[in-house]
View 1 (cartoon, rainbow, N blue to C red):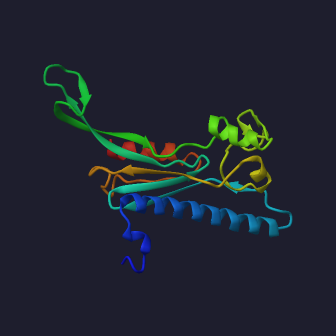
View 2: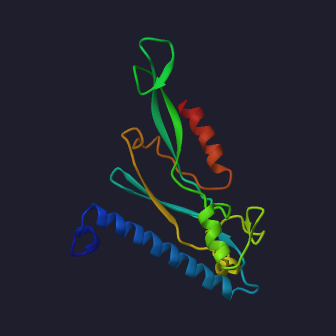
View 3: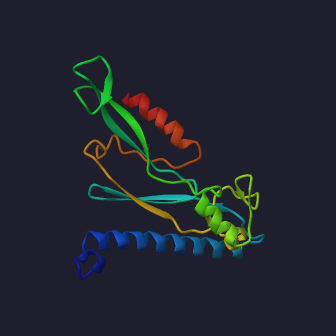
Length: 194
């Protein structure tokens, strides 16, 4: 295998570095392809998009996100009853019931974030009313060619999350990515598993 996939021959640190590089390269290529297509249209497309991508390797999720596309993990946590009292605690005492908690696995790229704002303002652009040049409300995206010179980038954040045995259950691993979909999906998930 290491002959066909040389990046697999390294240790864990090298593999994680390679995964990060693959995400960066894929996001840059996607942005470039979209921008080329947008410029060929008449009139030019001025659209853009945010994105989240998840890669599952064994028990580890690798998450790359751009803009305000979120990835949320529904994690089961046992609620317990403390033997000395009637109060509930998470993880101590005897089992009572399972609770579902939402774990955010991404960070929104908002122009009001200090590092994002610094990058944008370094180009001479402004952040007004939480938007790049008072127009675009995310600081990272695909497309949006009119904002690329104002510090809007396609470079994703890449994070990892170690899954537990509860997370790995097919009925509990749920990903949704659409405006308003995350809140609605969380409510439906809670109804069906609560």
